[in-house]
Image 1 (cartoon, rainbow, N blue to C red):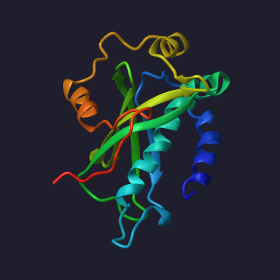
Image 2: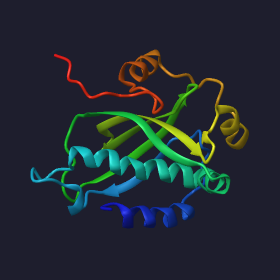
Image 3: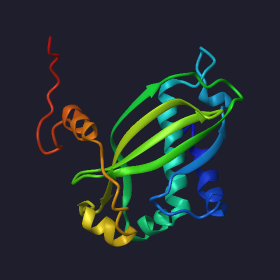
Image 4: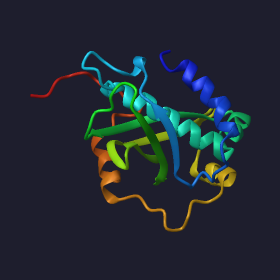
Length: 182
């Protein structure tokens, strides 16, 4: 709810920004707002990932993919994410959310996103997403038919595959029992 109005504004404003290809990287200018910070007076660690949603929406809207997804009834969902922090963004500070698609595998679309101020990375995240339809996950074949094929030189680093395997939970069709391992 805390980003609802910013998201609605972005859905409107991004339509007026320069068009891009879904395979381009984008830069979304932002400023740290009061609702972004915690008691330590910097952007809350959990807020970074919420703010990065805005960067992915901006890329999808400016590339025309958002409209295509809505028409096809596809919904984007995050399946896994990891973030590393380097410096803190402070109240009122201007920064950009840099976003790009890194690549695909048989289960996910991978994004790299960065929070950047003054040419320096303050935080970087890797996000595994999926597109869902009323019939279930959307296949890469369907995605590429709708969006076009990714650039030939787009290849995921091996560690992304390992990260995905090592952090995965069982599918929703299998139990994921809670039991602390010591």
